[in-house]
Length: 339
Image (cartoon, rainbow, N blue to C red; front, side, top):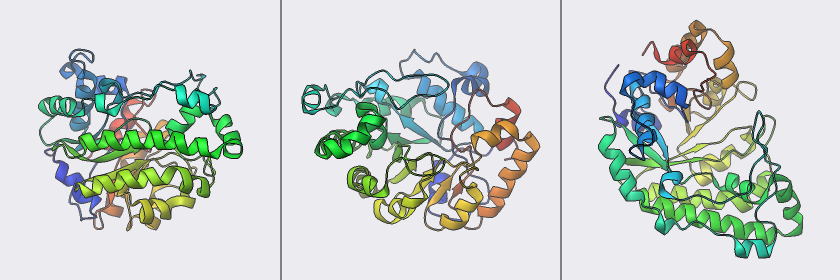
């Protein structure tokens, strides 16, 4: 394995040619992490940041130069919310915890001033693999937090019954996410802002482009501007078909990179061909493919993706969403075995 170097990732984001593949993963599940690390893993609860320690070292061992660091749980920056119905997937149709002006006024918002972001980043930097750095996030994205707090069905009704309340909730979420990132974006261990904010189904956006532009995108834009003003990058992870707002993502909000792609929506090769000169594309070996393709097919596709992008840059190899425990070990290893 070549030496880990976060600058290789930044050069890819800047669309510089590459003589070796760059890798990136949105998330790696725990069974895979422990399999990758073997006896090198640490107790995930001792120290209290041990699970992120394991996450960083697993990324580096696979060959990733950057690890996304989403740390609200350890800093206490969490939004109390109603219980979600969980089956084979998580339902968004739960009862919201904020549903009128009174419940909004009584809601106990987390205080970003109490989140000791610098201490946590200092501690992680001490135990990070040489050459690896992180992209930092404040937790759930703006839209996902809104749905968590209100409930999907309730949000649909609130659009007509009380749109001003939506703006109030989004402003509370956005201003807290902004302040959280203010406290961490200038840290030397952080190379950028990272948010996971799923906006789409397989066929379309969950809400109209006009809704997203009015309520959701302004805070995304402010936080991206914060990252850029600090000389850092900004990466968006969003599942679903978001093609209707790609120009917003690139030209208005000005994200530097986008991750999470599904073949059933549009293969990552096609996405890169259409948008790869305007925004870096990360991952794209989607979940269904990673479960059903052979290791040989996966390795061949990863090699082809590298050949497709090496002269123009702006692409990192990885899964479309995450490496899961349900994937055959030979399949996720096939992404990285040839590097």
